[in-house]
Picture (cartoon, rainbow, N blue to C red):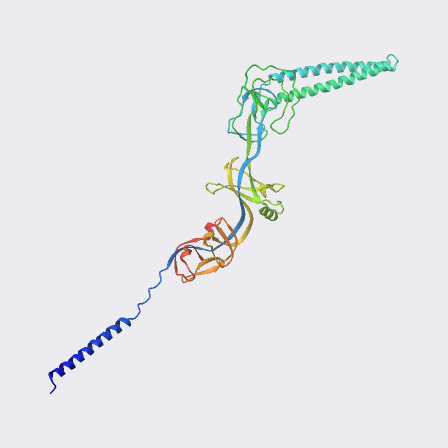
Length: 425
């Protein structure tokens, strides 16, 4: 029979073994726990665009200024008192329309005087010619000396010259009387009136307020001057008071209207090539600086004959019909000059283009919604549009927003998809 203390000792040994086994099993369960299943990655939301094919126009952009195609400062061609202004400020006028009138009475009197002088001298000439005819008849019969005949021939020649002078004086007087009616040389728009009726105007362009009565003088000499809207002559009216160089009104031709701008000499050479030395017209658009809206479309008409050495630019002038009168002289606008059209060009928004160590690239979304980096070669960029030469095919989906968090192979979700053609010019 086993003693009691030996039975307790075996029991303790068994319990200790079981406890050790439990500890071992617990440790094994803790340190050999199976790994948790890895969670699926969340797709990154992006905005994308479909690469499109379209005819794309290459253009030169510049800042231009509109100016009247023709601008005339209307000046008086005779001196006198301005008695009437026949136009409304800011209204359209036509070529030949009477704009203002100078007091014609002194010039009517001068014409009458010149005509009277002509008649007197014509009568003297007729008498001298009759005497010459008698002397010629008598000289043949020996009744008149040759000296008397020659003197009479000289008298007739002098009288003929006097009559020609008188005819010129009459023509000048008629012309000055005609100049009392100041007409517009062009069709255009009248500006603000520069002188009011009642002032004295002169052929030199000066204007004086009437401070005392003006007196008539002798016949006016023929007018002379340059330009279609002003010339100088000596008129019969005398001015009083201080004068300043001025005019009556400025007429601006705004239909058509001109827009001038400059381009660098490098781009100018390109324009010469594509236009065949400007033998073919180039399309020009005038754009609003505030909204970017197209105000009018015209043609490049004039290229300056030199390069400005100070700026390295060439001045160009375009002609616009301005049918809607959306262009105004002095207005600053953006100019877009069409240079060349690229047929079936692949276009993308400029925001799709990224730059890295290997150059320019885009993220293209694949059928599995994973992106891949494509290195691209560009033909050009213009505004917010890039023209792609290689690296992207028409119809491929390209990420345009959200690229900063992407890597090659990233899973994406296209939250918004647009067509590239909507961003092209």
